[in-house]
Image (cartoon, rainbow, N blue to C red):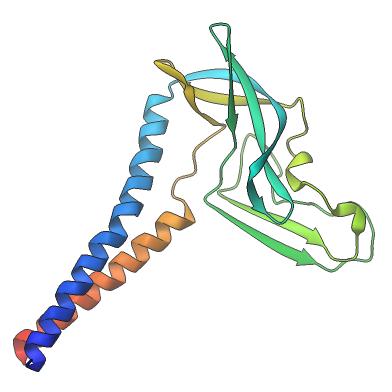
Length: 186
């Protein structure tokens, strides 16, 4: 196999890999934009508990929100965030440390940061209980044609997961172009 054929083959493989990387990113962006477009009605929901299967990070679970549409009751887990991260802070045991970076539940940050206090055993537990205590009223946006399709407060612009796939796909696409160009010069 000549070097130019090898480089061209490598370019083809990288091109295929970039397409495969772009597919989940495009799917996630399309899904989120469709959710925003279809969920045109709004209901007032109430936090009824916390998820047990969608653990965010550490001991943080997302709120489960119950809402009613035309007499039927639905639940949705959320709000969702573009990314999740946990930071451990050293403390002197004093209370009053924030557990998350959420300051206003109606103006949520894109990224959820959960703070765990290393020296404060009282800070342990679900960090989402402070900003979203049971019984808190929150906006639920739902699809009037299918009320079970919904989201809490807002849908983040782009998830970190989608950004990673976009980044990988872009790198693979550039590398593919470089190898294809080099193979033509060889």
